[in-house]
Amino acid sequence: MPSGRRCISTRVSASTCSAPRCRIRKPSPAVRSHDDRLTSRTRDRPGRRPVESHRCRPYAADYPISNVAHAYVVTSTIGRGQILEMDTTAARAAPGVLAVYNPDNNLGLLAPPAGPPPGIVENYAPLQDREVRYRGQAIAVVVAESFEQARDAAALVTTTYREATPNTSLEANSPGVPAVGPPGFPPLNFTVLAPGVASIDAALADSAVVVEATFHQPIQHHIGMEPHASIAEWNADQSRVTVHTGSQTPMNCRQLIAARLGIPPQAVHVVTPYVGGGFGSRVMAWNDAILAAGAARKLGRPVKLVLTREQVFTMVGHRGQVNQTIRLGASRSGVLNVLSHDCDSELPAVGGWPTLPAHDTSDALYKTPNLHIGQRFVSLDLPPTWAMRGPNEAPGAFALETAMDELAVATGVDPVELRLRNYATVMPGAGRPWSSKHLGDCYRIGARRFGWSARRAKPRSRTDGQWLIGMGMATAIYPTNQWPAAAKVELRHDDTAVVSTATSDLGTGALTVLAITCADSLGIPLRKVTPQLGDSTLPPGATAAGSGATTSSVPAIQAAAADVIRALVQLAVTEPRSPWHGAAARDLTYENGRLHGEASR
Image 1 (tube, rainbow, N blue to C red):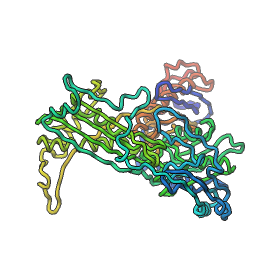
Image 2: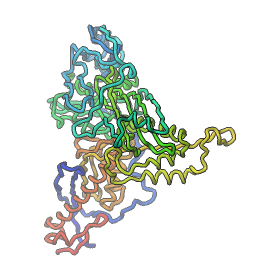
Image 3: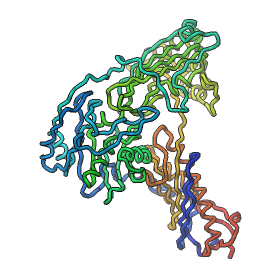
């Protein structure tokens, strides 16, 4: 702006979606008079505090909600069967108890709609029937004036069962049924044979060196620092519910809660600005949120439900157990002739995450003329599974890379050199080239920087005093995910900006990413940007999972910043009080928070 001239400050906002076919919100400028202007400085001064402070931040159960009641879950003590009788008389008469909800006094919750892919969410409605599907399933909820009263009353509930024998052994129920993905998903089971090769077994028989290894991965749990907890509060006419909960994806959480309550997604407001750990365990809306919302609706007052540590192990999804068999056939120089990867993965009868260990590992990593991928699901009477930190890639890569190391020993080929000799330049079995691939550079640069050439292949051959010194290598790959995402950038009249999107920060630094991207896009100091996330009323944000939140959010913020700059220029030439009123928009430029151009008057 020209110096010495009174300027018009604006409050302009723009939202942009980074995904195809997503709605782009039009700029909606509002005008306010003010004497300040956007600064041209682009870097913070030394000593300024960072975007994220270390003040106490509330987790879901810490929000100060008045008149809140406390819920405690009663869980099943058998692995499978039916509830014959549940005596809640003593619990209902206990001090402070407000209600006991169970199949005889249920919450009117709905099961999720059926459809492919099967089992992605739990396929039953909690407390709506007498069936026990696994040990640790929620079968009742006690609500009282305090947590201690609810807990103590829950201990007074007695249940009589008709027991059945649960299927819990992966080995006893294998092999499972072939895995099938959703429509349009690449085949999860296939065999590619070189011309003239009759079968994978024949290819192995023709190989000079054969390695076969079997791997078992037990159940693993991702238990975050913050226990799974929720507070649900309905408005006066019970047309809208606000749920404070820990979630990696506020928009999906809203959708799932709404489906279980039988209300429109717009009637659910999810608040989750601070999340105490996730690793996949908070992608779903689990029964803490669903039961709290159902109980609050029926009771007519806010309800807080905090799972105990023990309950988290059964009421929140876990990484399922997997059995894998890798068979490698190669020449004596280590060139692969065949790669076969068979696996049986736990998929509980109640649903959950379908673990596919060969997907994005054996079906993508190494060049081979004969390739077999066999992935099967085994239905078990266990708590739901869910994605946990590289859900397919971690178990699949461990099995494949261990087998490759065994092949290196069997052939006498250096492990790094073995990978390079079998380096794939196109997708194995499909022949599609990658848009980019630099794994070979990783091998070579990593080997050089780690001093790989000095490695001694013989075990226990290198020591440092009392210490045995070993050196090894393995390959890990991960897909590049990008989710639909929208972002809003707003310029305020006080020379600051607000950037918002409904993603989550579970300790991954999303708040910092939002602020840095916005500051860089607008050319203003970082301290003048306020990031907002973790709220389903914000523009639909990216799921904070699959290493895709940053790659999805950044383009949306950059596009929204470009939109708000265009809106600011347009406002400058159309606002009658602006010094550029009537000027051509093309004659104005924006740089580092300032508009430049000759004034029209």
